[in-house]
Length: 326
Image (cartoon, rainbow, N blue to C red):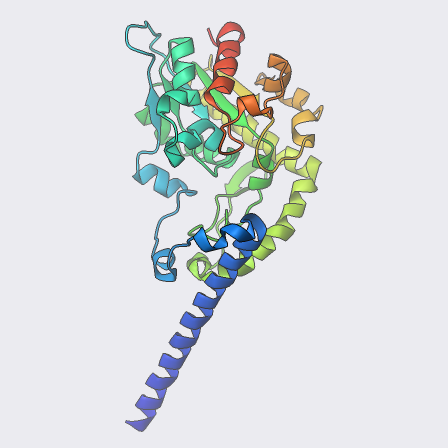
């Protein structure tokens, strides 16, 4: 009996230790966030979820699982009274495509890329991008194939690329508050293979996430491995085009390079290697050069952050409808 009691007490001590360690890790991460991103005079007004709220949040908007379970795609049709062609456009990307307006509630859907592109081209537009995503989330949807069963086949597919997507290809977790591993692939024997993290359930522990987040800063060095990262970017684009062509040989695959974001490396936008992608029949558009503007100018940005506003999307949609989407 005494032996069993000792065992139970020992187990209880271990559990209490891990809970304290986990809470401490959570507080350390919150403090680091404040130090890195929030002015000191605003600390008192900045509130994080309680430890237990974060701990039992068993979903993550950066994962495809959450997207699939919550019907994350948005369908936009032109304004009432406008004729539109039946074949749709699919658009992929991150918060630029989805529209931070729909996340922060500051603006209506009518100010997003999907709505404005639909109105301009007279085509239905399906938005299949989401905040915090990258090119791998587009490839995942195309490779899995369900999208071809649930949506009408497109004549045009537009992927909006910001240079931070190059870094996101290497991310372990999106950030400390993510719930699990970030979607990643590697090339093996000429094919993209999804990377399955080891002991992923442990990635929910705050102590582990603190370690992974710190490791993430080292992984950012991969952002500087330009040629290697561009090789992987090419593989994503070529593989995506191959899948699209299998379902519609005449589909036009467009990569819209958008010069913006809170963290970017100009190399990925300016490199001459984009010619390799054009040579494979993918339409590559440099939005800044095509429009003759600087899309990082304040008049093209949401006043609350660095994301595009409706004026930027109006200019881009007009350009696309005149030159690339008929």
